[in-house]
Image (tube, rainbow, N blue to C red; front, side):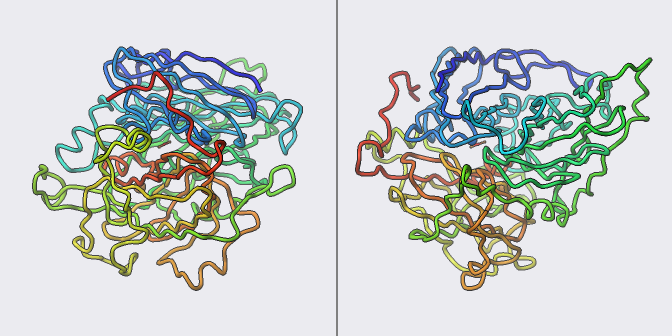
Length: 545
Ligand code: C2O
Ligand code: CU
């Protein structure tokens, strides 16, 4: 394969949205940032120069980084942040992933504006498992805040309450015509009649899952999280923060103007969320005398905000391709069983301030543990055997059993503890992890993302996981392969993967406030015996804390 080289200069640049201008963090002045393109088997070397006033790190979301956690990016997990004025070089290798992934900052809330697409094409000489599209277009779903996003986590930590919501959703950085002062701030995609386009859709959103659709056009889903799927025809998709979806769009409708649009899907009853809609334009190439007024464009029909049925109707159809060229490698036998509850909690305050709901503060937890980032990265501590940074006894199941999804569970049922514990996995362990949503506090869906791996979603359901019955219905033939899986409000998901990538790998909810509150787990996957199964040595320019 080839080696591609890029420079990422992190700096603040001024952008105008929703009637006002402000400085945001960008890469090379671009928002969204540059798209990275490679073929499977290629490598990339990315030199990051931090010319901003904030710490920064970069994560290549969906890229497995075999044996090289040093380039994975989450701050205080695999590296210390790159401080203002400093630089660091990331090395990326595209091995088995193919399709759409993305990159984003992994420091504080910087990823709100510091993100971009990663497109990985088939190896030269091989082909897509569908006919070659005429053109490919990244569609990045995001958000815009009028306030400085970098201050959100600190403010939320001070009050203990909900972080502020965004002021608009965006498509490729633009809110669209339904927001104030945004009539010209709308993304336009020109299509030729009769051609097929590959939309590489990424959710860089911080807050909510979204429904997305295109007026009068069906979409055909062909890929998900950097792996191919069986083709699914659909009029809308449900995409959660962190996920990516490849869809084919056939431009075969009468030449005109059509809106594509996205708005929230939220099951968090009672919790506030932004109910606005972002729009972009599909414009058939033709000779118009004058473009019609916006009201004459066609609008997509999106399901209502709270329509869980619409969300599951779409998600349950997704299957991996499972062909000779794109096989599934789902572990059929499991030797390591993990069961993790994921909850949002309310805590009484002792040493932290408490001006959140009911005079308490929010926390979020996995198996009742709310993750606390250490002051030097866990990977370095592990590699150099520095004691006192983390503990190795993250529990393999919750401290006590209860009716996880019962009605009106008392808030004090589980009071999480704050600590820094990791899950230790043997090299090559064949792992099944059941993620159990709970109803400890008004529950929400959680898109759970694992670094360093793709996993197979072998089963899911509502209510409490039943270890006797539910495994009988697992799909071990063509389960979807993903890196970010939605765990339903009051439901469970079972995933499987083989722990064949030694290193320190983060798993967390990709809804940013939940991650900020501690919905995070760290896996430590041990080295194998042969030299090809061990973590690579650290690079010489690794930032220090
Ligand atoms: Cu896309 Cu840990 O993140
Ligand atoms: Cu969550």
